[in-house]
Length: 338
Ligand SMILES: [Zn+2]
Ligand SMILES: [Zn+2]
Image (cartoon, rainbow, N blue to C red; front, side, top):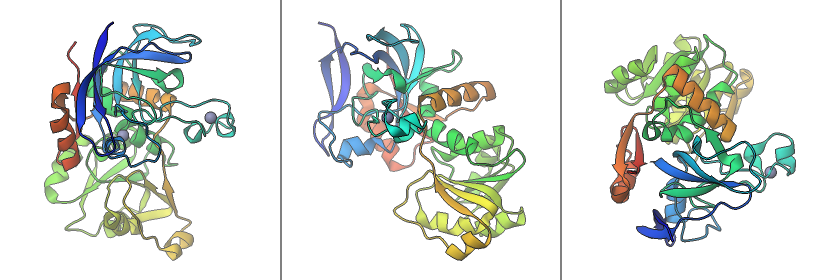
């Protein structure tokens, strides 16, 4: 029997274990993907630490998958062996629940999550529902593009659905794994892009990524600085600090939106400020497979690139620790030797 190496977590809070398993056969409605690279995301701690109820162990984490379809299960039209693909956080949807029938696939009541409800990309192969699979453009190298399947689609899809129009002031709060992509997408979409982060040393990076303006929220009042620009139509909040979100929201323009994709414990909002200016605070989910596919194509055409630190499978512990340390510049990726 042919086997594959995967990185599994045997119990909530347990260590990563590199184990050999039989290569699984794709069941109806699924494809088998030979993984070339998989990003390591902070949300992988959900599987590692058992933060969601009902996760079945052992489980293989990983929802930033780039690879090649290697076998197609029964009843899967439209996909074939050899196609380059990606799989992201949205691990597929049923197409027949009320949400799916309304086109709200992200809210599917039978929705799956890659690397959480089924085994993900920290391994040489994975089985994914066809509804979770996105086409990968030929020009995107796997290790480079894996993080686009989560950090990329989250920021791209949030911005393109934000209501901002070309020329509008759009600020990106935080210049980390999400933010360094958010600034690139915002600039390439034609927004007047503002990067906001801690410390003046990040200014050259923000400019290099495409920001026209940089605000150091340690030395400056970010809300006041945004109001000097007329206010931000959208502030894409990628930071995980509630205080940073509180400090920036006074810079939201009339009819503007504080658009949240980072998840601090809580934030404070001023109801009066919201209602006086018809302002909104809104969250945004990542995206489904077609959103990921659009993200990949836009990234390839517009040359949006994730900056990554790449590790081999054997160094999964180092790679995960590096991601959790918050010091990675900017995403961490497991790449597979073939
Ligand atoms: Zn993620
Ligand atoms: Zn559904």
